[in-house]
Picture 1 (tube, protein in one colour):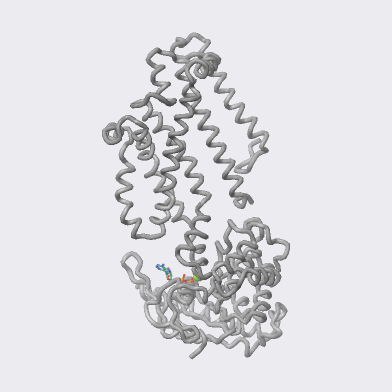
Picture 2 (cartoon, chains in turn cyan, orange):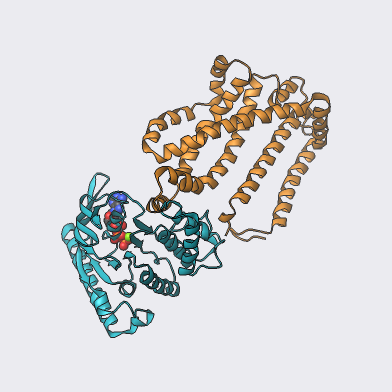
Length: 268
Length: 258
Ligand SMILES: Nc1ncnc2c1ncn2[C@@H]1O[C@H](COP(=O)(O)OP(=O)(O)OP(=O)(O)O)[C@@H](O)[C@H]1O
Ligand SMILES: [Mg+2]
């Protein structure tokens, strides 16, 4: 069994008396330390699947196991970084990171302070410790959220379009930092994005989902094609990267066409 | 001058505020001295200021003000002390909310003046009935405002809290409460204003002290300047409290400024 193991996980929402199937049984095994990126058409169920891993949504069927343990509601083992409302505005940068340490009983005060210093350096926020989070840029705010989540030392890091609202340059910067952080922390990570290039760039492995209800369409071992060790922004020009991008985009486009056709059939 | 939805210099703001007040006073003076209305109905601003002074020298008005302020704050704090924790509980635990909401909504729509006779039967004409009127007028409104403030805390904050390992209780204390606090304080400011409305009602109906009682007893002698001075006193107290609350809000929630 894989480190993070999803076995026939499904989700059907009941909204206004109507059943909406968001995730059709998905089986997926994720190895420890890997960054797995999810791409798929908008509204296909990626967020729902990730929230089920985080314990924020209860699966309608199937089981999710982490290191063999059956997972239930949310806890410190699975940390989440949201796209918006990521940092607590009533806390400073340092205060936000302290919130990540706050509920840990495995560390003493001195260790927490030391850990906070290390994380501030890791995400490059030295000098901004005392700033409130709505006075720093959106990119810095996301780094605060990442540092706060890492402070809780989760086994799995869940990121739902964490860089979605940022400009291209800031995104590139944070993508590189995410790769670097993964090298030092070796955190198992699920990363949802709409940006195919981003999905390849930060991935050990890339999973393409179908239109709703989400089901695995393609599962690519990116690390085998583009070694993680020498991954940086320049890889965007590598022939293998471009070929991979074309492949993923082709799968997504074909899926889009299929979904539209099916919708047409259903309407007819 | 006409910057759109952007702040203007602080000085300009203060000057404009003063200009607004002076315009009002000027118009009042004009009407009062024009002879259109009899002075028994509309004394001049100066006469009201004089009456204001007389209230303090001849009537011990300061004591009445003290009594009224005391009643308002006692009832207000009592309401806050119960409404804040109860509102948090109602918003965080659906069961508590479902249990209380229909009842609270019902009571909220009862006009407080209609309750005054009943409250006097229950609590007599002493302090208790006045406090009861104020509490009836503010508590239920405040409770629902607190519930709303709490519900508006983004789910992301709460979910972040769970994934950081916080318990429900820790999330209420460390995340929901601080996240909702700025809008709660704002609602406290508004509710305190309502308290004054109900205080005057309570003091007019059954009291032998307080600003409302003073105004009401002067009315019998058609001492219009004094009646107006009493009203002005309420306005000044309200303005000062409001400003104090705003200052507290700015100081305590600096992080809201960008
Ligand atoms: N709480 C809910 N109640 C009812 N339906 C829901 C709920 N959450 C999600 N859905 C539905 O489930 C489907 C999948 O939603 P989800 O947010 O997981 O998609 P997504 O892949 O993350 O989309 P996007 O890429 O746009 O973020 C959508 O049709 C959505 O309307
Ligand atoms: Mg989503």
